[in-house]
Length: 220
Image (cartoon, rainbow, N blue to C red; front, side, top):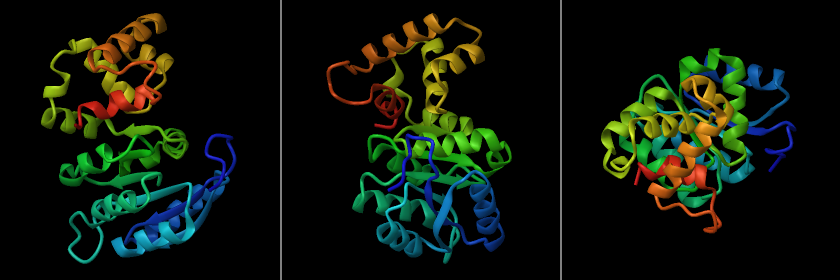
């Protein structure tokens, strides 16, 4: 493993059946000071690469051979089954909810799901890499919306504003960034966050990362 919390370069596995996209991601990562330690073009290759190299992060496409449906997500779930501490950021042109909720709910963080269009927002994309590598959770707003529509019951006690705060937290935003987006003070965001923790029965003394647990709560 590298230094995912110390701003050093990350060791990354890239899994995508498109050679062009794999090479493009390698260039982006290299320019940002990261190292691609292995690439893969299918699900089994991803699993083998992560187990062999123990990277700080795996970037995974959803649709890979042979059926080009959800092989990447299924492989990511298998990686997390064998290596629960593996950090995985899924990149997709689509929101595939069939395995996305299983992947996101399987661990305590260190996962993300972004649409490929977000790669063009380079600063945010690189921030997402570091957030996931450090054990955080980053979800594309469209992913958040679809998953929340499927799994609304656990959030029944939350107010509309608290749901907005939770959705922004799921994107990996800090309290300051949430405040800027919603047009409220940081103190207001902190109060909403504490109420979310209380309503989801997440206690400060449970020894777990409450922000990650809150983001994952609606997936359970």
